Image (cartoon, rainbow, N blue to C red; front, side, top):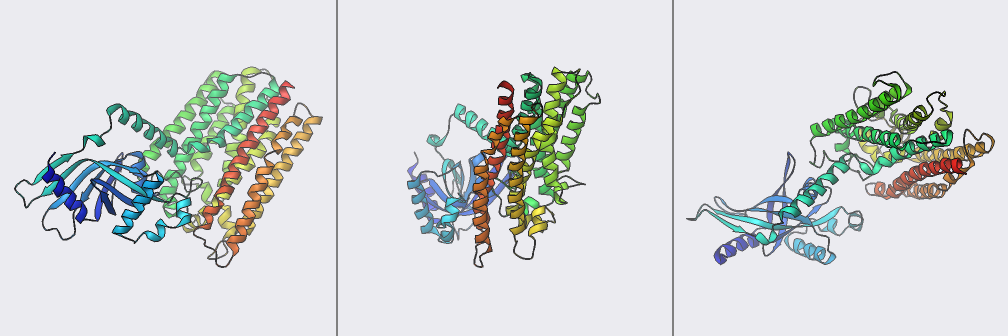
Length: 502
């Protein structure tokens, strides 16, 4: 170990308080200046977790840094290669806070903001160097290297962690947690088919589900690409896990071109599965059939939801397109595949599944509707005339009274509809079953969402309301709406299954 070199490196680290950090994911490089503090060779800095550099560090922790003290003449600097990580240990977070505040108090109001801490907006990061290059063009030896093998990870560890991060990135890009919007109508369509036919083909069901999921993924990616092109997602300063897109483009994780290509790949996969099923059922991939029309409708709605030239969501038709695609289209398509495979000689009896798909269609529309509260400012700025913008735009400050009344009314109607559909099953046993009344149980969750939303609306109307932070306090209503949709869909599925076996 070269103690003289260590002393020179530490001297420069102790002298400086500012560094330039470079991060990259794929072909998307980024650079930023940050204040830092050091403990020996380890470097600590503060940043906001939604920033581009923090997002990229989560996916690719390898960073490049340059440290040059103020007032240095000529080229005298440290070039640092290392791994950055978000600090999670509470004691080390407190230590990092203290160290950074000793360097600068510029960010102290944010660092101490309880709202920002609660919502994981503020973060502290540590860089552990693997190589530090000491550069001094005034000295005889202009370049000197100090390596830190103890900070290097093993090959197998790098492969496994890199693979997991990459998988997580793609799941984020397609917004996999929202695939519940696909699982519910497909499962329901299959359950109603079993209720009608007293038979089931699991292989065809899984193919149907995979095709629907790929179509959903393609829709999400196409949405991100189109909203990027219109600057809608860039304008959105109130994004959350439930609104504002996946943010993979804005965070520098994917280029817009890559998102577009992935969207095409997903849609092609969905189309391929649809043609495979159509061949299985009718002998030719492009045989004219209800399944072919359902597939065309699904892809059309997915592309034109935000894509030019129609941009349905920009003209007030987006909610209806989602309700149609993630309700009747998916449920009817799944039901038809089972019906045609198991009873091809029978005329397709589609009214039961069409009726059953109405609640999940309304509830998936309400997911978008309530998410639009947080999107209001960004949507209005780019001329996206959603129904939230149309009903809440009364001037500078949004008035959410009408939109929330629509939200509540739609929830009450949905559960009244489920009740009516269940009761009708006692009279028309081939149309429905009283067992689906178990899908009324999530009304308790819906009531909780309405109660929380009502309290939120009162706070929003207060004259001194903090309208920059209040939208985030609506997140539990977003969560409850998603939960209501999925539980209603699954319980309807279970209800039709119970109506078959009992």
